[in-house]
Structures are given as C-alpha cells and as structure tokens.
Image 1: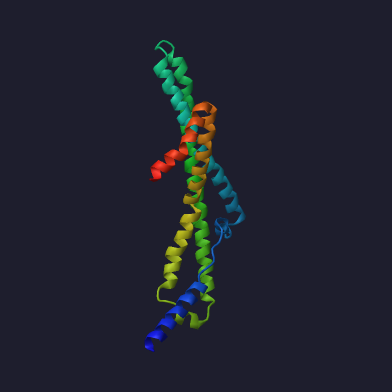
Image 2 (image 1 turned 90 degrees about the horizontal axis):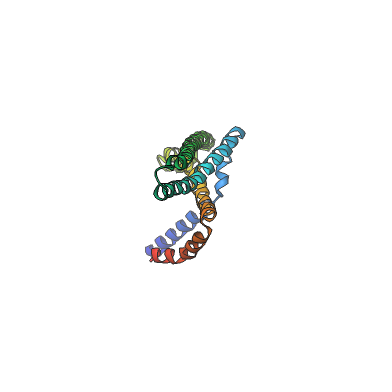
Length: 202
C-alpha cells in the first residue's frame, strides 16, 4: 500500500514538474528588454559581425593569388606585382581587426546592459510576491537565478550571438569567393562535399 502511494505521489510530482516547465521562446524574444538605443547598437554590431566574417575568405583568396605571383613570376617585376596585393591584405587586416573589435564591444555592452535590466525586473517581481512564496521557495534559489540564469542569458545575447552572424557570413562569403575565383573547381569540390561529410561522420 505504501509502495503504491509513494509511486502515485512520484507520478503526481513528475506531472506537476512537466506542467510547470517553462515554455520555449524564440531567440529574438531574448532582446525584448532592449531599449531603442540598444537596438540601434545591436544592429550596428550585427553589421560589423557580418563584415568581420565576410572579410576572411576574401583575404584568403588574395593571399592565394599573392603566393601564385611569387612562385610563377621572375624576380625582376615581382615587387610591382606583389605590392598591390600586400597593400590590399593590409587594408583587409585593418578592417577585420576594427570590425571584430567594434562588434565584440557592442555585443558585450548591450548584453551587460540588458542582463542588468533583467536582474532588476526579476528582483522587483520577486519582492512583490506574498510571504508564502518565500516559505515554499528553495533556499538560495533567488541568488542562483540572479547569478547563473541571468549570466546564461547574457552569454546568449552578447558576443556569442554575434559569433553566429560572423560564422554565417563567413560561410556565405566563402562560397561567393570560391565561385568567383575558380567556379569549375568550386563546383567539383561542392559535389564531393556529401561524400566527405559521410566519410567524416563515419
């Protein structure tokens, strides 16, 4: 009898926990606490993140042309051939450094500001609860949520979110640069991607 009652009690507890499980929200709903100036900064950070990702394949392609000029041409006119590409690589490196630095700064700035606002709103919501809520709540749960949970949100809406835009832009830019420089070779390599993915997964 006791075993049945304990089993029924555990089933009720599991059903209650499942019913109390918070619903999933979209990624962009995480930014609902951002103000208009912060949204403007987020848009700027997104542009800089995309620029940082798009410049990497372009630099690799120009560096490949530079190595080809060095290996094929003679030493008489090598300076006139190499110097423009070296300058272009220098400009790309400066642009990539500035884009990466500015995007990271903006993402971190807006992420910390939103996380601070979330902590403040959560604390105000907790303080408005009845006394019975504090009796039922676990000890230290408020500190845990204020520290760890909001930190997880901050990590998700700051530089890690910007890295996603950088990787996507780098992926798309890589395909564009590859088909612009060597379309036939890129098409052949693209047909081999499924087999490479299957063998790599195995």
